[in-house]
Length: 456
Image 1: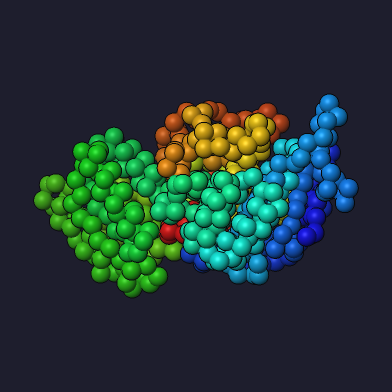
Image 2 (image 1 turned 90 degrees about the vertical axis):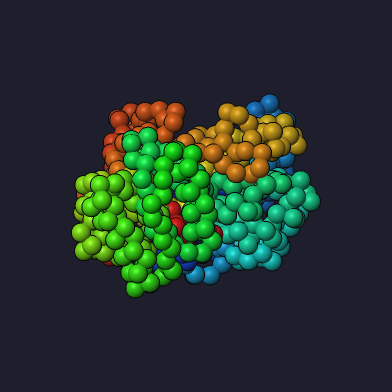
């Protein structure tokens, strides 16, 4: 076991001067190809311990002294991520770990100790990592990232009565002590369909990917359209991974759209839940088919949140749901200042999870991370806005609706309960800008900014 303190920041948090150790790795989630130069952090990935101030051998083993001089044991928070090696998912995981460390230093609570473990991205690795963290005194586990890893960690944590705040978006792993902080695609679909139908657009077409993610999206889409009083006129599925495999299904949908318009019963909205791996190929097909996007509203999911989508005129004016962008922007700026590059989009999950765990740590003893505390009605506010956990382990988020512009996106419908957010120094934040301008990749490259359009 090696104690790590403030090893990979540059800049100042409170009174702690921090330095950065840089390395370059490729970044992606393994779902959409992406490349990002990341600052490497913490080579002791199997079991690093991080506190809000530089620990010594003496403080490692001794209780933390409170304001009254009374000793108390530190609250230990574990973070399980696929940190080992230089794979695509490891790059994202290391950046998420950095975000968790940033939250720890910014909140500067000396009674908190972070135990970071490499879960190897597997069920067996996560099971072992969870057991090690619990043996070392962890009271709550943040992560894992992947559903299979959650399945491995959950039984171990459940046996020890330790809750898991996981980052997977696979709702099948939620419940019985596992809470998903991730962006659930079903909630995104409900938000965008409800908003679209509320604007009088009730005749829908859709082109969805096959596979587990596509099945979840399709079910949610059908349910949302029905609840909104709408009609699905056309729906086709395609095999993701190849532009050629989209041609046939896309053409069938486009033909029905044109036939409906010619027959005097036009389709109002086309639902495209793909992300950066599919939309750049679909845009030219839509234009070539002669679809009038001034009459047909194109809508999507949070996977649309990536740089340069508006460079294709077809998508300008399209709507998609996403957390309020202002919190993400300020977080991205702070992350870039400290690590030298923009964070991947999933980094905010780790930051918010750490903030949540620190917030609840002030509660009394064994009850601080009880189900009642985690599912409290007041919920939590973080980088991605308001979130509340339900007893079944799912998360309910306040999502805004954004409209694609040529450069970036603008909020057309704020997240429920969203309040104006001041930028550092008291100046107002520009609510229009969401992506672009902050360490974004060069045109044509992949981007970890996007929320993955896949089940993970």
